[in-house]
Amino acid sequence: MKHTTLFISIIFALLFIAGCNKDTKTEVSTTMAAMVNANQEQFSQVVSQRHISSGVEIRITGVDLATGHNIELYFLNYIGNTGLYTIDTASTLAWYGTSAGSLSQATSGQIVLTKVSYGFMYGTFNFVTKDSTRIANGTFVASVPD
Image 1: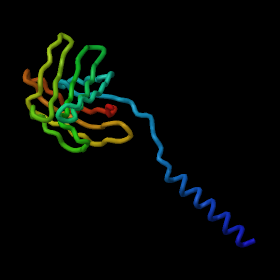
Image 2: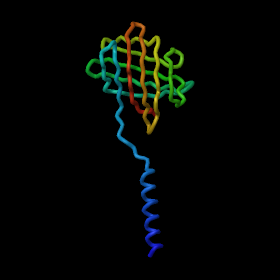
Image 3: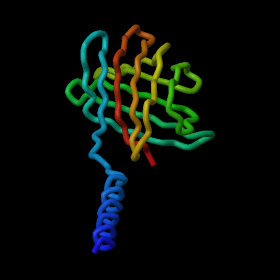
Image 4: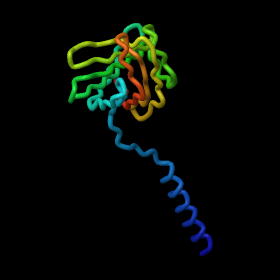
């Protein structure tokens, strides 16, 4: 009887441990938001694309459907690493566009890729464009493009 009780206890313990190690996926939504010249903007449509030429290029675009404004973030020669990407026109680029069709390139700033997990990229960004538009406290969640 003692062996049966011990056997059942071991089985339950193993089932409990196996249940705790399950890898659970949660529902993730793509988002982008930022302060644009001290005004909060929510970019409700976020699209990511990948292009392979001399390296892997990742472009993340957020569009505010109400205003037509957009933010574009580019990682040139992306190799999958998280960390700080300085906007420098050689490897990391950013733009802010308005509904009037103007698109102003960033002259300084940074993108921090904080996490890549379960097919999504998470990060923050801030930059200043050629026409002095200030983008601050930017955040994004975008799908990792195929």
